[in-house]
Amino acid sequence: MVRGPALTQTMWTADEIARLCYEHYGTRLPKKGKPEPNREWTLLAAVVKVQLVADWACGGSNRPTQVTKEVVSMGTGTKCIGQSKMRKSGDILNDSHAEVIARRSFQRYLHYQLHLAAALKEDSIFVPGTQRGLWKLRPDLLFVFFSSHTPCGDASIIPMLEFEDQPCCPVSRDWANNPSVEADGNLEAPENKKKCEDLGSPVTKKMRLEPGIPDGVGHHQSFGNQESGPIPPSISGSNLTTQELATVTGMAPSGAKVVDVYRTGAKCVPGEAGDSGKPGAAYHQVGLLRVKPGRGDRTCSMSCSDKLARWNVLGCQGALLMHLLEKPIYLSAVVIGRCPYSQEAMQRALTGRCQNVSALPKGFGVQEVKIQQSGLLFEHSRCAVQAKRADGPGRLVPCGAAISWSAVPEQPLDVTANGFPQGTTKKGIRCLQARSRISKVELFRSFQKLLSSISEDKWPDSLSAIIKHPLS
Image (cartoon, rainbow, N blue to C red; front, side, top):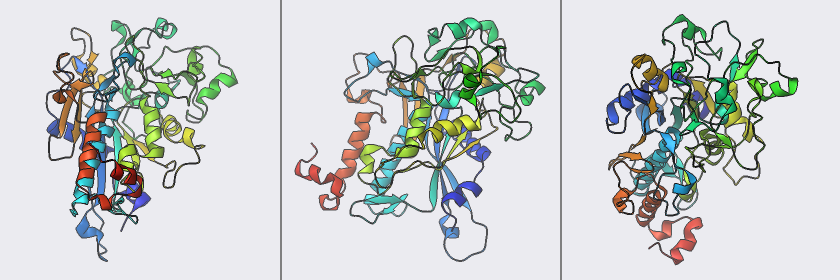
């Protein structure tokens, strides 16, 4: 049986994962919540289950091992709410970036799979652990995380190399000097500087930030109102000191000159050393924790780079489900769609800056997650939509809705806007119907329902105190 790293390395490719997610988006997600054609764009993320086919995994057959690949959760979205709109009741989605929606949808899938395990259903992804009341993941499967764009925050601070051709117009210098000019998270380029090159043009194909990408697959640059991902700055010809260039040391291919960096709209958290704001490659300080910016009202939501790094240490299951699991549920790989990309920046953001994390509970640790990029472009990405609309009237804006999909039998879809189900009025906010199925309070209710299906004498030791004080 092929397990662990071998399953990761040989049983799928980045393009296979991306294609599967794009097909799922097109066939399983409703029109409601998707971008308005030629006017809006969005981001996509998903969790894919990769599993050995049971009939082939057993026995001593020498026939080739086959696997199944299935999307088990999916999310779209580009927004997050400001600090003033957060609620202690947990009935609002604070962060609706695609990566976060996909992960919360994944938690909903895990809840359902634990329900199956508790009912002793053989088709569950969980099997009994070695301790009472605990479950563990089947050894013949793993999970791959997909995102159509580089995560916002540290992973989006990507070196811009000196090439003969620059495929996109740079953002104006005023943009760099006035970072307070934002629109829901990132800076807006002037209208006459927001044109993307034809995706099939020789210039676009020539622009390759990472030498490991197959020939003919260009990293198309996007900019402007990009809530999640890098923003190209204006090119700076200033000479940088050795110390300033150290902020991007190791990210450029050997011999390539770093003239600038893509910039993220995510802001350094209070207490962190801030960005220098200097022209060129020293504009950002890399490796820092950041929060997503908002329109005027500062957010408390950590960047997607920071959240992915946290999941790579603590798992994706969350604190509630950890009561019932023997080990955390880790992602084995992360695949990024076609976009500005740096392998070194991704590794730094997701794993490199966590290497000194220590004194973790048993079973937890920094994972060596595999990181790859696909050459396939998401149809509703900013660049794809911009290329289709050419010089169409009006400005291109991010879609305000977020879609959640989970591989569960009951009500798998959830479409939200501003943290509540789409269409919710101010008057109806406090109703039960005005809660997203992946909000904190609804996931807690799902956990309560899960516990109620398990006999108390089979609860794990960590929940023994709750037996004395039953959940109401």
